[in-house]
Image (cartoon, rainbow, N blue to C red):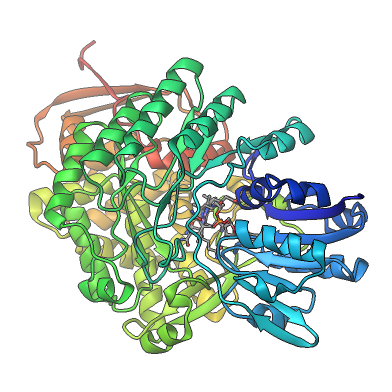
Length: 638
Ligand code: B12
């Protein structure tokens, strides 16, 4: 019997030189083609995982009977455009859409003629059932989780919760091997699912399914996936788990990763989302991984510090005192922590957001913080009309919110994000003001441009962080031509739907930057002038000109720049120990004694694009944009 041709697409952008393995269609294919009758009837002719030119893709298709598209926010428009061309060229081909960007119900079918079938939710079982139905010419009405056209009408079949855990892994089923074989020279980043789902159902997130809860794939499958990664010398491995460290067996998985790393040298990088109520187990796991250099840091997650917003998004935070202990514990173990906030959650006000930032800083989060704009996801509780109406959620469609995307890779089909710019508790003007403030804190405190000054004033003079950064932001804005004026304009553009949430600038290469990274880069680019301005700004806070100048000289000394293999600082105070203690949230005495510090930078960058990429983009999480442990003290008269 001639087998019929199936095509699957899960297009991603290339990131640097690597591309993610298309894990979702891998999962579908691994399951479907493990069923002998499907293998007898269908052949998977091609797997599209890059955003290739649409003409080229269509020109190489051969009688496709089914073309399945895996849809995420970053490929939805491309998928629709390609699907339209496929349908035009092959009207008999069944065009199938699935994945987290496919909304519930049939709205997508109603708005896109080129799509024939939607599969809602997990795809393995309904995908295999769809193939069998096509083969047999049977009705789709018996396949749960589908929306489809039939005789001029649209039919919706309710989904059936899936509890299976014996799906074959796309990693070891031969699917990934095929991609590696067919694309020599391509660097893939593998994704392993050790569990599926998420126990939390936060309003802004579409991860997991209430009905199916969390499921664990067999340990043997996870180990086999990891061994495949090592055998194929894959440098990076990501886990798709939502709460790694939640289950006791996760410790075994971490041990396995460490064991393989020590035996084979692979993987060299490991990425996962750790359990939200980060307890002892997560600490032990990250400590083990950190010892072999496989921990990129731990998120001590908050999203919002406002009790009202927490209630509205269905989430409770860890106890703030426990958070303080954790920060200390991770700092003592030398593990980077970062905290995330989401801006635009209903219930959040300007006061609560700024108060939350103050609280996190006062409790010691000086290492890394992220402030994400709230993205509106179709399958999240916030995606429902009732929620939008109840909380006055206003959203704007903007160009895809994808920092570090290479602008040269922009192709024929733009993609979009939808971000929340106002809610019942925050209007657009406030949203802009608060976002700008957040960017000022991230660039000047967490990326470190003015961290020493802020810590000094907090610990010595009791100046609240929020007051300090509000004053600093006003100073920048009063200039009229500062980078924060530019960001402010762009925020106005976002609200008006005419601008995106990233910035690009030729000086820093061909990729786009987050606002805070851009503010940091722009300041370092003109570092001397920047710190001269900061001298004027700090005058009312620190009237002693000589002391102020020395503080700013040390502040400038620790911010890495380009082309500086060796640098020295001489002064009258022991800043290094003093700052290190404050970064760990401990008040210390600033010892008055002559000091000479020196830094030899072995990884010095020769150009701004190189600096932007290596120091700010890759280095940010580990605080690599600032010198710290590399600073050596030598005797002043040596
Ligand atoms: C790996 C991952 C990434 C990788 C992307 C890798 C890639 N390009 O493929 C990285 C780290 C880059 C990433 C980034 C982001 N991500 Co992400 N990410 C994930 C993650 C953890 C795993 C996805 C995965 O492959 N899972 C394994 C597969 C097997 O599961 P699945 O995707 O759910 O697929 C199943 C079904 O959806 C369905 N299905 C999927 N495709 C198809 C196709 C067909 C034809 C059928 C029938 C069925 C079907 O069947 C599959 C098997 O059951 C998910 C969360 C999760 N665990 O799902 C979030 C997730 C996909 N990410 C999400 C988001 C929001 C983001 C970010 C915006 C986060 C941020 N704020 O920065 C950015 C976006 C970046 C950008 N703008 O481009 C959302 C997606 C929302 C959406 N509508 O697209 C998710 C679901 C998490 C969430 N919070 O809700 N992410």
